[in-house]
Image (cartoon, rainbow, N blue to C red; front, top):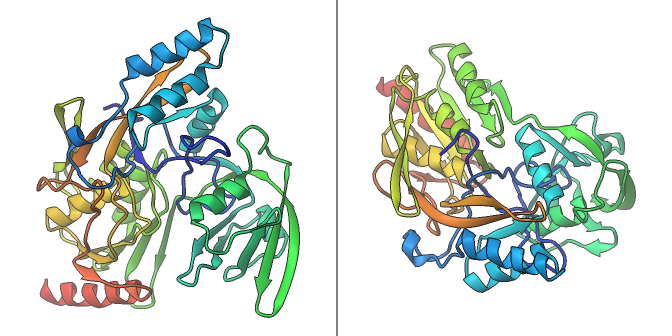
Length: 391
């Protein structure tokens, strides 16, 4: 696998085409343009982690269907979509050239959106969890804790966050910076509507802060370019006596090479994961020299996916971190791309990855060592206190 290969969540659901999927991480709710996609992603294939049980289209078949359509004056992309749909590859997808270019921009941490993140609460309401400073959402006075009730007049209560992202982002062909999106909002008893203009924004995938008790929290939103080195820098700059929380909640993955680099911050070399591509087994290893002594807790939830699950599994299997939170999403399959005659790109399932102990993640997720819900950060502090005493 090259340094640009990925295990990450599928992209956006395009109206009228079930094969174009949406990326939902902390870049959600209008902040996202799409998933990080270039050479391999990690979507879930429910039921089994055995790559042989996953029906998948062959690149040659899809390319041939696209070429035949083009020769007949038909759309190669639509022909490829039909071929992937018939194949039974649930997470295979076909992207236009413009959509794929958006993916590459996302790898650099750039996106078009309004600058807010959201989650779905247990009652089905969509709650704003973050508003990016200087974004259109911030300029409109939207705050963390506000409820998002509608997007362009369509009610969003009860919808999956991925669909909310799709509505906020708009159709891929016309969701450019400067286009408008109308949001119905609620704060307490107040209900109002804001019309925002989407803008070109940049992500902040790594944030670091210290809790009052001295614990250092490294929050990783997504594994975009440079994130692995930023995690390693945060570890080396933290006080040597401080326990650490690696917060991977809501992280839908990204570049697997960046996840392996992040693993190198906490491991002294050794295996991070194995994976197969068309039946050929390969391995990913951490670099030597990581901090192996500092008490470490990894925080996860149902939004922890793909490359983030790969990292979590490595830290858990090798006894480097106590994993706290809720079961992760379970997205451990690998996709590879091929360019079609009209410039569009087909990504098809070619294999699965496993943790160092051989556990399959796909369709199963990772079970934390300690279950916790909204109080997971507090539970992490308690665990770190115990680990510190045990040193």
